[in-house]
Length: 355
Image (cartoon, rainbow, N blue to C red; front, side, top):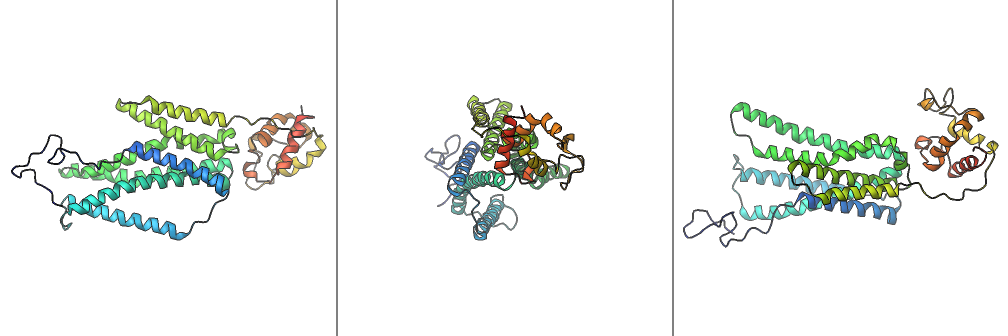
């Protein structure tokens, strides 16, 4: 395989590039939209598979992770050396056209594989966090994961690239365009993470989402909707917005709202008197909601809510039923180990004598 020079006699290059026969290369860069669709689709498959076929976090051997990490390192080194040869850097060696063609195919396959693995890890992470931590804690951890990725993009790629561009300007030389291209790529990635991260930052106010039985599904749907809407914002800034992208984001938001609606009322049993729930309040609520809390980490009752006497408890009966039974977000992280049967008893007390 040999590259044909542009100035070889008898060879005419068609306008716009391509080979001597006028055909354009069949291998082209993968579109960002294709990678996003692959990642989102794999994320959906991952959390459905985890919830349906596992129901627990399966063991993953270190060998699998080390193998992928080793392949990534080898590919990164190969890509760096190949770029150095293409740019004719000192001591980089000559370019092998056949090797470059093979690496181009490998890079295209790797981009798709990376999107698929990223989506799979995102789906599994959302599921696992919501089964390891409380819903509130899981949402915050998920947002922190995305935030760490954004910070690393800025610290290791965007800022060093900007420093290199400033240095080139000060030295009076032409800046290396690859730093600008890499910074732009990572900025685009961070842009798509913006709305999901902002949501997780304020998710503490949405007990109906993080306290839902399917909180991990709602978390992924919110993230997908945020990314799609952000894609539309970027398109609008460029003047080529696609209304279908915005419509898709809004549809996902609507699905999230429908799934998060309160569950239909179930028959919880006949009402019970206060005497049957008094001990529950003493053991599960008063460690935090007391004049002098005994639960570690609480110097004062949260929001000043005290639930020591029957009158204080009855005055907040509706709020207690909402937090303990309807949304199940109290106690936070189930610190006091309240059981489902105890929650049901509180709901039965509210159903009758508390009203």
